[in-house]
Image (cartoon, rainbow, N blue to C red; front, side, top):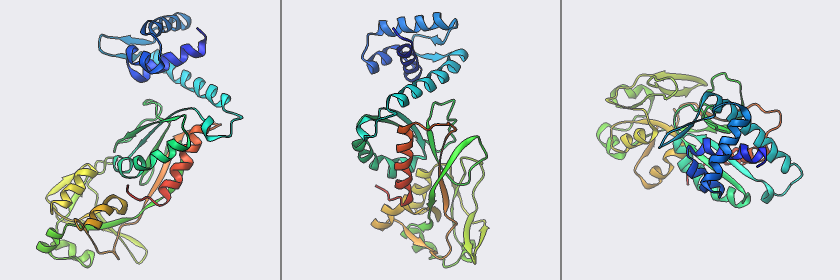
Length: 300
């Protein structure tokens, strides 16, 4: 068996955490997977995998070797498609992680069009609200909303998400409709804990070009966008949320926009990926597609 095939099998084992699953994915006998790993460990002179009855995981040496294998396999795939200009000729897998609501409402509904255009590409779409470590978690790129921390990742700005203030009709009926942030002392807000900082975010608005904040009373705090919106729907208070996130609820009358002249500053959106001198063609087309998609996000 040639080295490239050994690398492919090893990388797949790490991705799948299973010899059996790897055999299924690659369409080869399980015994071939086991033999390939033994051969590779003999070649490199190190134990690459921890094996238990339930799970296979890389050793410290295996993790370092996995990163090298991934780069080599990507270079091989890029070399094979260097002179291919047709979308149907692009081959490979793209691992991306995005905020959960954006993944569910914007990206997933649009993915059929991307996959139809690139029939030989595969997308592994992770949706989380936490910071993902690209190298350690084998992710090609991540979508980030908000201000970025300094890092050695390449950041490409994709646009901004417009924020609005909303509440349920039941809440507004019981508390009245605020006209200005000065009215908020007599209202309730559902508080939101930032997954990045761990702090409760203040109520924010832009007035005369200046960003202003205040504390709004509230009895409920959420640390997840789904719960945050659900609490608002239940009449527990006002929230500030990206417009795309509640477009369906506003259209159905479940939520009502308030204080449209006093909204928070838009949130920047960026895609981040590790620095590479030559970005793979498959990742490039995905980033370009995502850039267009996020320019004017509409919930599916």
